Image 1 (tube, rainbow, N blue to C red):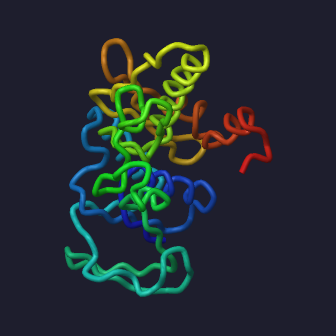
Image 2 (image 1 turned 60 degrees about the vertical axis):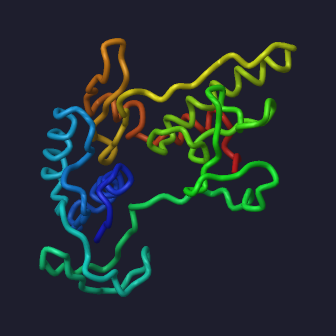
Length: 233
């Protein structure tokens, strides 16, 4: 199995594959020179150690000369050549790089003008710029931070408080400021993974056991089932 991209999505996918099929050969290829740049050295070192123990072949600082002949996610043996000159044969590959903001429904510009990346400009209160009663949360915002579920959940808490204040006749005063450092819970299967969370003293490295308890055991499905119900679409 070939995974193109060594960000959180690609690495988490590699861990899930190894969880179910420990004997499968999994290769991760990415042009990045290191895993999780910007995170604490202990986090990056532990991540490398765990991937090695799982037998995941991580090849950084390289790309592909040409894309695989197969569409992503479809089985069929193929061979690709990396820009480093290595040849990799696999039966399936997954794209785990790049992001696309799902904002085409705003393409006509009637509500707001999107950024070149397709995002929506928001204020500190997460109002869509120019509107007092329209909010945006999650990947669609132009907040300068990684597009991750954890941040989106924090956005939602801010917006919920501001909407509640307005319904009560007040002003939206709750604001959102991105952290000066990244945070992550990155499981590698149900028992491993690495994490970095905020603390009063700055970024705090958390253990694989904490990653498992909060995310790795069920990838948040239990949390969202309890919050939205088992039939939420």
